[in-house]
Length: 185
Image (cartoon, rainbow, N blue to C red; front, side, top):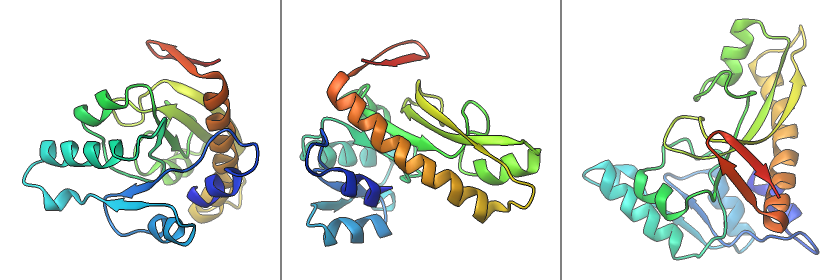
């Protein structure tokens, strides 16, 4: 996901990656470091309680003054302090057509359920698990020969492009939402 954003964020693309944060060592930190993008890590296990971690990751992120925060691949529920600091500006991707198959196991769950179409969703983050207002979705067919790896890779291809497109649209046109309904510009 990050590599796609970095590749897109050149020339006339209306946004730039100002920093990459993580809660653990991960490939995204290596990608960012290679691209000379500032990185930071705020590990949940380094704090006595989740609220302290929430405060620390909020402060570390705010130090980079992002207009939008992309939590794609972050795999942690962001706390109330973080979400209030960046209200309406935290974006996530999900490898299913929400509200179907929320959570960390969307791809195997869709295969187990036997759906013929799945896809990806880009949404605003709220306090729930994959429950925020939907910004965009795109379908991906489930092929008879698919396993988790092949289906997830096809979803990721669409997910990367959709995220880049949604972020550009948000940067140029903004987003409004009322309840569950979000509209870009």
